[in-house]
Length: 295
Image (cartoon, rainbow, N blue to C red; front, side, top):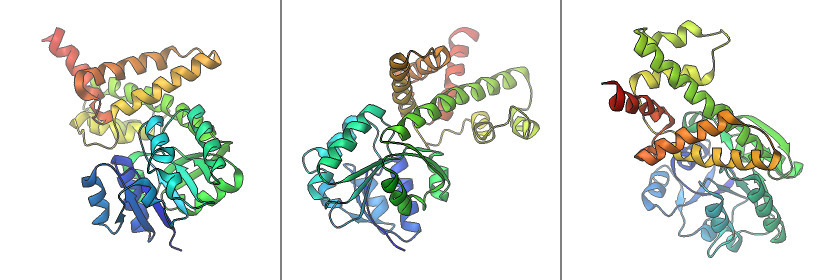
């Protein structure tokens, strides 16, 4: 059954989500401040809107895919925002990665307008979005989370209700701790293999099925070896998420020394001008040290 959906945000992830929703037969309206990004989805069958409010008219679901809580708030509740166009009962599904407390605030604000809110951040990046195999962690009322699955089943293979509003975002922060540390571990191991003269391209096969095996190892070590930096995510988004992790850790009194170091390395890469690059570009951290001190 085709669903009527609005998509607010057609960037790297939003574009992939929108593409998958169109390919699975849904009716999609899209709004993004970047008209070129909108045009890419329009070429695939979406209808362009001139504001978030316009996009949210006459739809049952509004998906937001944006990169900061401030932007989500403006898109939803600001001038020409979602709440100005959406009919009562419309379900907003926020697939952005933002702070849990901001999500809880937005859910309350939406409820005051007669709208439902589900936070459903993701893991798996562009490749999994395009094949409908994302992992989604959802927060919100149980009935709303179940209703959101009518749309999200098209993009996800794993969809778990984690609890009330904000629980999905908290779970995403835990995911980002594991991913951020995992990216650096695989990059560091790749550099050691290269420096030691081992054929690093063979390592994923050699370690497959062992305790060191992981999805990150299998996907990213070949990319690290080849310096394949095609964009499926952003280093500065990891900075944002790890900053939120550190904020949460301070509030909960949780000691997280490795996550703090991981965040600092990502901040260094962002300061060096690599914030907009894919996680694969963390390999440049090792290149910089060699150029400065080793050769």
